Length: 298
Image (cartoon, rainbow, N blue to C red):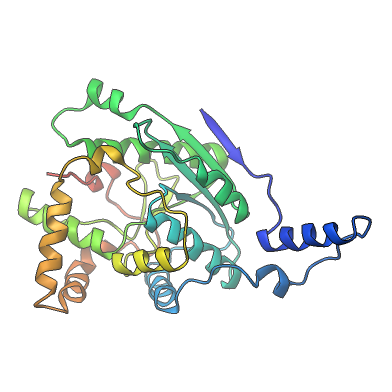
């Protein structure tokens, strides 16, 4: 089932001004609002986050003129924050690019993504909704992997399909530095391999570029931003994963505990992971195939 949200073409502030004016004098015709009036209430991400995202985008050359970017919007703090960040960059970047969002509903009890449609409309962001019974698929097809890994791969496939169907050539994902560090440690500990998520690469069919603009940003920064900006975050947006302890959560706590005695831990891990994150892929032409990049929660 697919629903597309594209009808809203007016910023929330403009709509409010027009409605207020109509209440006072219904026969009056609203005048065209200036850019300052239209943007005065837009949420502005912290400069500390914008600086890190800007560095990552420049380092890995994530955006190009005319790109059509589809964001995987789960409703969690990270993807919600990234949508606001991308909107901010869109207004100020020297290049032109489009932004849309897509939510994958795994049809798991307790997950209700319906508020995201109205939120995206308020931001004038085209919105796509896809649903699939991933638990049922896992029961039928999953062999050996964790449910989280299976779910991630299924969602990624649906996002690729949405990109192709709707004409988007870039898929933006909201993993941050903490996610990359956890993947790196889990891979080394559990499989004896040095792997983590890429910042910018090409999918297996070579028709969608994947970017992760938050690779330099800490999870605490997206959490604080989402809280301070009062973003309508959908808590526990994957009930199946939150229902029981996961290997990733254990790794997260391990690293955070180590950071208490080593404040430079994540900076050091960032430097150590550079060859894995970049993969000589500054132009988005990675030689690795997606099958080699899939993360396994061991």
